[in-house]
Each structure stands twice: as structure tokens, then as C-alpha cells.
Length: 145
Image (tube, rainbow, N blue to C red; front, side, top):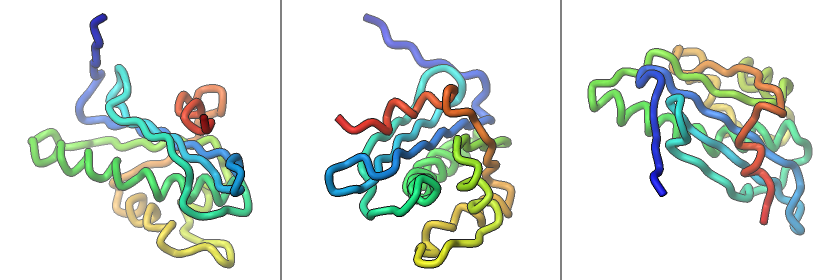
């Protein structure tokens, strides 16, 4: 069996992050994520979150802050190889989480460490867009086995 990866454009990175709230017996949430340049996933993640969250919005914000460092690493690696990332798009299906990440305000009790994403947005290194749940292929990775 041959495995084939391709890219539409090495200057555009696509990242999807999704989370399912309180799906484990200890009531922790589960994060799924993927990074692609167009044809096939370069990196995928599926794991339980390290802390309990009180809502699906909070689970999405925590999941994003857990997965964005991989996005940053790939961006820095490619830029060192002389492939600058001109467009870096992160897709999410929770519009409340998108609003929180864009404006940087945090609900009471939520650690500010989960809002470093706003700095990436402000300096133009990341753009967050809404993606309907039906189109979120990492939704598969949010289901614990």
C-alpha cells in the first residue's frame, strides 16, 4: 500500500482543532487536531485534556492552546527551511471560543495561559475561522477509544 502526501501550497498552513467536553469517566474533555498543507494531514493529535473544563467553549479554548504550539513549531521549522508561511489558518467549530480567542477576554477562573493565541492573531501569525462541525475532520479525533 502506497501512502501519498501532497500539498497545494507550502506557504499556506491549515490547522483544525476540536474538543469534546467531559467525555472521559473523570469528566475531562478530549482534544483532536490536525495540520495540513492541502493533501493529507502532516500532524494529528488525539488526547485527553489535562484539566477539567466546565463548558464546551472552555474545552475548545484549552484544546486550541494545547495544539497551537505544534502549529508554531511547524511554522518556525518551515521558515528556517526558507518556506515562509504567508497564510496560517486555524479552523474551529465553536463560535464562542473563536470570540474569546480573538478578543483575549477570559471567563473567571480560566488561566491566562490559554489565551496566548490572541498574541498570534494580533501579530498576524494566525487567523481563526469558523468551520461547521460537519466539515471538521479532526472531530473524529475527539472521540476517546
